[in-house]
Length: 366
Ligand SMILES: Nc1ncnc2c1ncn2[C@@H]1O[C@H](COP(=O)(O)OP(=O)(O)OP(=O)(O)O)[C@@H](O)[C@H]1O
Image (tube, rainbow, N blue to C red):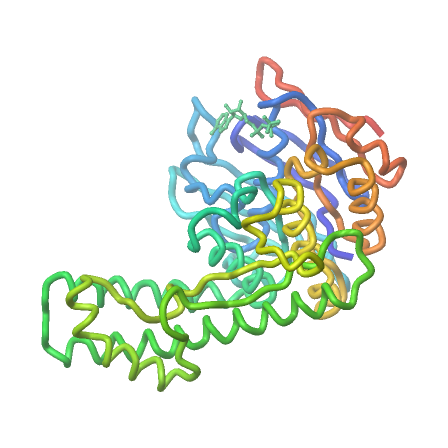
């Protein structure tokens, strides 16, 4: 099992101070709009590497008007042991991590705690720009390999520097070579990790009995093909210099990859599916991500489902709950009404979130 069993939030968004005692069951958070439900999911997402599910800065998450900084503390029950994990930010500075009272870092956190999520901001994932789909996929890759973040940061840094040379119309090959070698190494790692993640998702979807439609996935380049090795990528970057000088930016590499989804049974591209079908395809991928992780890590990840219940019909909702329970995942789900979780019966811990004078309030309902 992988679950938070205690969660304390201090000065985190609308929560002045909240202590949640969790028993390992899925958690259903219900209450009116703006009560602070998503803020709790965001807090849980910060027990994995990165900026959390809203991609907010550390400063944005500090409770206003005090703006002193925030702190989250949790007991993490992992398959073989439990950890005391703390993460916080002071004065708007980058967030810190402490594991079992020792200073630590986000990659170490990613190794002990895996968190995956589905949020309303992803609803237009299949329709909007490729960047969102790359980010979605990279988040999945990161759940398999926390060091993926290092590769993407290093690649982006080198690319930014190369783009600056291109904009300045610098034509000296010596300046480009070092950057292109770095981009080739990290870019190839990124691309290989994405290919591996896509095949893990495909396998997990194929192996599972699920009520959700299979999303067939394909990685494409918005132009040309992705070079197959680091050396090929290095050569392609060198060859592309003149073209890139004219464009003022780098035109080849994993930043030009797109993730194409298809509703397999219908053969319809995800972007042409109905709103509900698009959502169902995303649920399918999140469940596949969770199943693949469960197979590899011995426990499913923590799964955050923000406002998912309200978008599914009753049959799909019941199927989702059954699948989460069969997986044994601590899913954190939000909805405005307790009735949205009726099909969970006693299988979920019900927490009611309300907005009081001093901020959000959390009460255990069952
Ligand atoms: N830094 C902050 N300090 C204080 N309050 C904040 C901060 N950031 C957000 N809030 C407040 O948190 C509330 C939003 O909380 P949240 O998004 O968790 O709501 P929710 O319960 O998920 O609502 P909905 O059902 O509408 O999605 C808003 O009232 C917002 O003003």
